[in-house]
Amino acid sequence: MERSCMLVLLALATVLAFAAGCTSSAPGSNVMPQQTTQVPGPAATATETAQATAVATDVGTPPSASPTAPLRALVLEAADLPDGYSLIYEGEMLPGAEDCPDGEFCYLEGYSVSMVTGDAENSTLVDQTISRYSGHATEETLDAVLADQFPEIMAADIIALKAPPLGDASAAYRFRFPSTGDAVEGYLVIFGKGEVHEMIMVIGTGAGENLALDLAKKAASKIT
Image 1 (tube, rainbow, N blue to C red):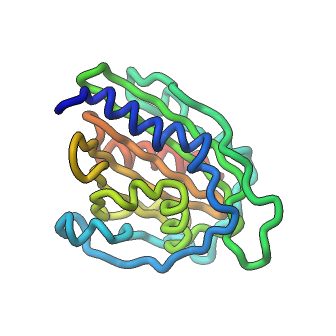
Image 2: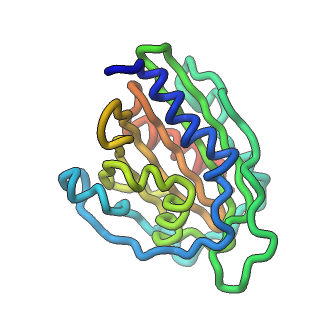
């Protein structure tokens, strides 16, 4: 690699994770859900899956009542992560739509946190975004939220994984960003309960599907 992993992670954190509290976490006021394309699991090739959306599960019929707790109360704590992680960013995302037209799917508010572990040669970033939208979580809204908040991930080499049964709907990805050059691999789990939509993203040398799923389960357990 021409650059150290830490430099790549910091650049990606600046573009993606830190942006979650500043720019891309302030989605367009009106976000229209997109149709979900069902694709095979990890056996699919990178070419086939680069343009695919996640294999999602819709497990809440009818949808759950929307959680009323402040979004800050849903944040993963240090005890939820493996030893060695340090907080690098935490804060409210930019305000959402003040007026949401009837029938529109609008971003309302959000909160994000980013944590990192390791050194210049061995680094892992964990990013959690918690957003409240005007509609209940479904397979279609998961696609819309991910495309709205992290379009870079949707444009990366992406493989849909088996989604965990979390909340009302969930999806999971493995991705490689960017698709060429000094790429960083990562895992992302997105799920929703009621109007709350969450994303857990793990990037770097220590990234793994099990870690992403474990953190997503812990995050989901905080939504009541």
